Image 1: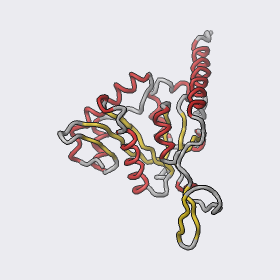
Image 2 (image 1 turned 45 degrees about the vertical axis):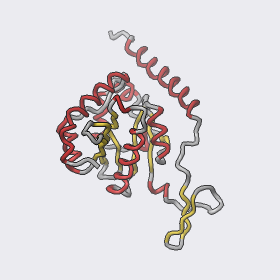
Image 3 (image 1 turned 30 degrees about the vertical axis):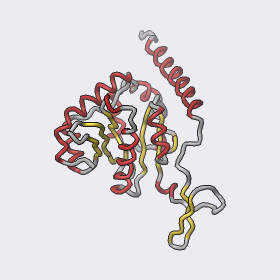
Image 4 (image 1 turned 90 degrees about the horizontal axis):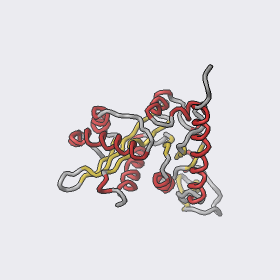
Length: 230
């Protein structure tokens, strides 16, 4: 978990967030170094550094709708450490921290990246519709800095290029038939079964669907942009 001692990395983290977003051609909810420092001071962030003090990766927690929903935001890994499994490790840590601080909250995320989808899936997230996410206006306001915000707005916040994913603790702990797959746990005399935390869909098929979705939504936006105004 990040602490006040890690504040010296805040400027570097925010710069890399912006650089990475531009390279992907997407947008992010822009955060200032002061905001990142605040998350560290609040104990709502995870940071990875090397023994010699080099920054490796970072992620932080945001709560919405009176703590009914939680988002693990701003996941970023320093370029020289990408592909090493750091992102998965940080996501696992921030997920565990979120569960500890907000045990009843639904944890959600929006992503266009297949790699992030796979990580989320391994943690128990499921793809959902946008209607199942927070309605907190402060959260959606953060999307205004994304290059695809006009697409989101045109769809009345019901669809966009990002895929919505959600972890629901209530669903995770729901009693199930003992003959179903998973790990059986006896708790207070009741049988609970922890389902396998994996996305059952075909990721290659989903990747093709994402390309199709991008083509349709961006194609519609381009057509709209060319409509003459009289």
